[in-house]
Image 1 (tube, rainbow, N blue to C red):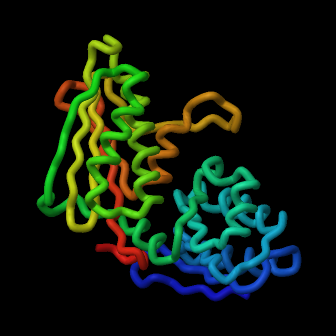
Image 2 (image 1 turned 30 degrees about the vertical axis):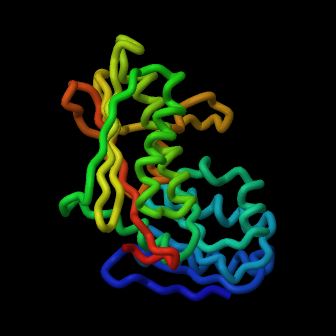
Length: 262
């Protein structure tokens, strides 16, 4: 069974599913989602908290939704899945490969993520450091970032998302933004706000606007860094750094345990 709730004034819908998602139920779910997309929903939160069983038909539904939403710059957020359903989703290999399909802990967290953090307000505090553009130092830099944000009390999953996303930004700065290698420095700045945390990573390269074309080859050795950043963070922006290279700005909501924004 599926019920649809449209968020007023947005292109976002919450689709709440109950029962099994199998060959018998998938056609009606697909029909309902297709009608919602035709009616203007571009971002769909699929509430899986009351779903206990999914099979290959459900995975086919996700592939269809990805193909349907990609041309519309849409997104499908799979929210609240239990342990068993999450395991099947992980086994499918779709998460991280299908460009428009993401996972969220809850419907509330998903809706918060779809409302990008504002770029306004004064930070509660800022911290910064510089690290040599040496790949061997990136683990230390990632650890330093997680230590700095620890007092904010973010959920472990959010801390991990930030660690991976900033790790990708740091890796790109080493590979593509440091023409002199370890002689170049990479700047990191962290700003804590009431509703979000922002991390900026700056390099000295030629500049990059964030436009990335992920390879169609799922076994390609590289090319997924920007995809990971956009999937894991609530806002990702690329601009010019003071040193003439690229500054990547990443933002993550600060959430209460129940999922509402602080």
